[in-house]
Length: 184
Image 1: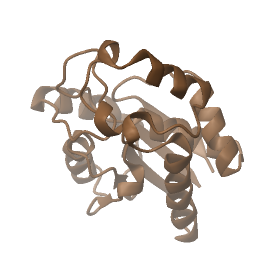
Image 2: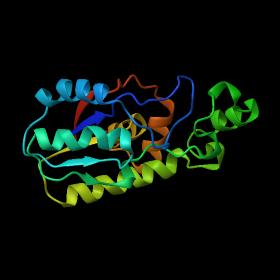
Image 3: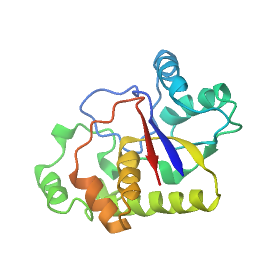
């Protein structure tokens, strides 16, 4: 199966803030720009799946329409990691001891009391398993950098714990609106 992964457009939020699962808007201009960039790289008539967070929804809806893909299938398992009380706080204002605790256990620590990377890997893995059982040859997925990193790890054939470890320790350079195609 081919997965065409698209990172959502840049959301409207100040730089330097933690915003995992916060439901942030994107501007119409940003969505239109990203839609124009990604549409030529994607096949028509392929189902579109999306995180239900509005920064993904605002791209997924017009994209599905432009590709004649039918209705968007929203799945909360595609959401970005929930950072608990860290959400929308400045990274520089977070207690150093909590940052250090996360750095010492990047897979198991729950930043801000939210999810840990292993939790997110488990839900992303379950999404992939369900998707593969549908027997489709391709799917388009509009989601988040963290989700994409986990999908990349799964495409390597890694088990869930190893997916989490791989995604947690490998830095990413996934641009807003970037399209990556993986073979599962």
